[in-house]
Length: 154
Image (cartoon, rainbow, N blue to C red; front, top):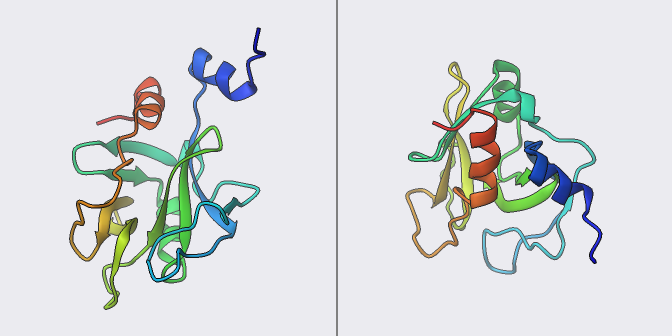
């Protein structure tokens, strides 16, 4: 019989922690604005902790964060790679692309601040606009279940 891991046990007990991690190391896929998952290593601690996530709207793919977390995101360098995780397991990688950017990122889920005063960040398929050729994991079942179990799903 296979021994259950801590992550498996957390999933069964409902202790799923959603977090956004920056990457210690990562590279882009050659010629694309996309994180190469084979080179990506999560930072030791989350950039945005589970407790700093207030809500997630699955219909518009938008997190509402605490003011402190939103302010940290606003200070990120352009094109910073990140990962959205549940219990440190990567659900998807993305690239921070503020709406003031004049360049494009058509191959990744991108993050930008929708309203800093309200702590809202939007995750979209590419930048600018939406690219439906990107694998859309923004409403991954593990992510949605973790947020739902915490009462953070809108």
